[in-house]
Amino acid sequence: MVRIGLVRCAGTVLLLLSVLNLERPSAQVVKHATVTAPNVVLHGEVHGSQNHTYIKVPFHVPAGVRRVTLVFAYTQRSQHTALDLGLLDPSELRCWSGGNKSVLTVGISDATPSCLPGLIPAGQWNVLIGIPNIRKGVVSQFTAKVFFTRSGLVADEPAVLRGPLRAGRAWYRGDLHMHTAHSDGQCPNQSGKMVPCPVFVTVEAAARRGLDFIAITDHNATSQYDAMRELQPYFDKLLLIPGREITTFQGHLNFLGTTQYLDFRLGSRTVPTMNVLLRAAQNLGALTSVNHPAAPTGEVCMGCGWTPAVPVDMSLLTAVEAVNGGERVPAYSGIPFWEQQLNRGYRLTAIGGSDNHRPTLPLDEPGSVGWPTTVVYAQNLSTPAILDGIRSGRVFIDVMGSRDRMLDLDAQANGSSAVMGSELQAPSRADVSIDAHVVDCPGTTVSLVLDGASSPALTPQAISASEQTVHWNWRADGARHWILAEVRDSSGKLLLLGNPVYIDWKADVSRLQKRAIEGIHAAGRASRRLPR
Image 1 (cartoon, one colour):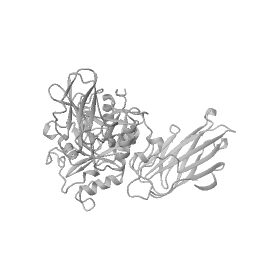
Image 2 (cartoon, rainbow, N blue to C red):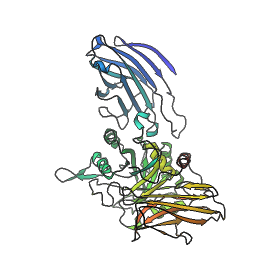
Image 3 (cartoon, rainbow, N blue to C red):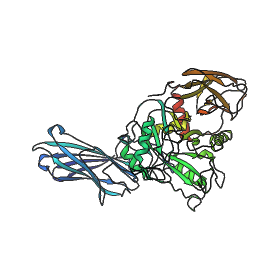
């Protein structure tokens, strides 16, 4: 801690500054660190003699900062003291909120309403305090806590910005792929003409669906984050996850959890190959997935299919969009591509996304917001927890976007157990007990898929009740396998797709994925009902 000392500012304002943790992270890969302590703490007093004046309280912003967050509090409100709050960078006014906000954040691509996003210049900044009312003889004490964020990761933001909307382990339902006016999302205006559609319309549709989270993934854009920052306090039951669809001529990728810019110009000198792009995303700490890998590519949709010019290191990815809401032809399903990666030894989580471009579509139509829904078991409803839940693989896809259907899978052998996304050690000839739990799917059939195919030893079972657990016994053979559950209706239509339990899996997983798997697995079996 560096103490700068006592400073006298604007007459009688006494300040004590404490500066903490100003060093840069040393590693190339962004480290996840829970931010708890402010970098600068400013204490001061405002006296009755300063009524109807403005005071500036200086602090220094070092180079390399991508976000400045200010948390402000003061005393004597019961005496009708009112202090207005603003923020000045070295050259201009960045925020002026009046007295209605106690938290301000200014980032490169987003800011608190009443603040301007943009580059964060190093140098002297000032908390600007306006004093519309303080009674004669009253002394109000204030504290301003200032946080510096050096990456675009939500996980690196101060807790006041990234706190969970809902606490507690649960299954959370969301949509991980959608577009707004900030790329090619459209909706009818008051005259019925199709126009670029405001972010609010998409978020409102997600709220009507009853979703817990969405990722707004406009093509290569970062401008949508400012609108999301404004909307999040209003939609306090719906988590807005910053995302982007990185659109290239050789494939599309989801890029989740950070607002930081990623160069998408695949084939350029800067980004010559898909592997270079994926390593850059990994260095920024983002979660990445392949979108609609089996879609056709060409003049109608250049790059929509997965056609990298060089072999891709799939271990650089976390997930595959196995179900896309825009798919109308079974041949375009991403499931075979995903299963192929599993058989190659890559533990990639299957997720779904509506790929919605028309948020006013009726919610009972394929490709409407939340059709399909990705259901994630997570520690709480926050961006870091949802992304860790995806990394863990304890995820299933509700293909038609219901509010209540559920699928869970666990396996046991030799006194050990594993849930979706985790590994079970089962030596040759070990008896493996497998349970699938299904909710709100009467009249359907649940099947197990072994290494991408059906197995005579794992017979499909009928679901007749609104909540039912079905059981199989399977004899391990000592080889590596993956087993997942899927639910289909009487016509064979896929309703629910689960992620695998891995049997004697030897492939390496990333540090973040390993941490996420351990966190979810340690929680034990979840409540069998979806939170509502």
